[in-house]
Image 1 (cartoon, rainbow, N blue to C red):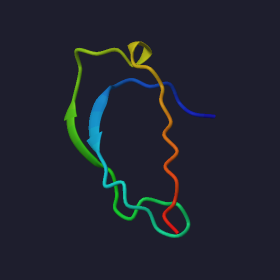
Image 2: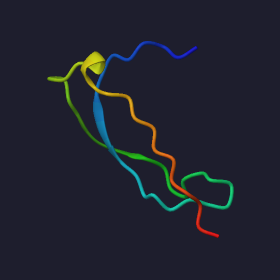
Image 3: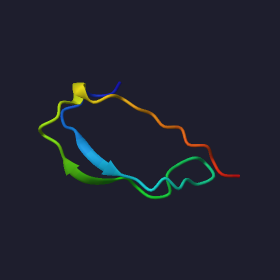
Length: 52
């Protein structure tokens, strides 16, 4: 079970993936957005196809 969200943060990721589908580099936190509510952010999942 996921704990409830308390803070909205902006992150940056390198979209390059390894052969297992994992990101090659970790996500990096850019800045916190204390003015935004976690319940007001739409949940998105992106599924990028792997390059073969």
